[in-house]
Image (cartoon, rainbow, N blue to C red; front, side, top):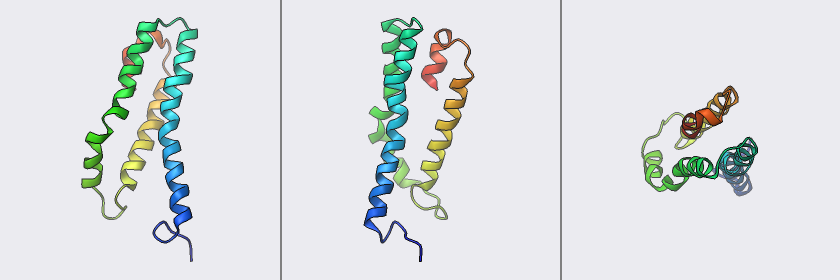
Length: 114
């Protein structure tokens, strides 16, 4: 019998750690790597601060959209799996869109939205 999350504590902890890593990775990418690269490209402190402000909003309002995630589910997929798949898919799409941007400094608003 394959292990599942409902009856294996260690598997639940590993899954929780993996999900927190998946959540923190894009945040770290934006607040450290992308900011350093943009500063190297000549972006001003004001532009960088504006970018970090807009990027930080989703993490700041998690308490608002958390109840919606708990309320709306797909019974066939479980309680949170659809939301995780949607979030990971959107993150992949965002990274692909950021990859094709030519001049990031001239498209700061688009980069903030992504």
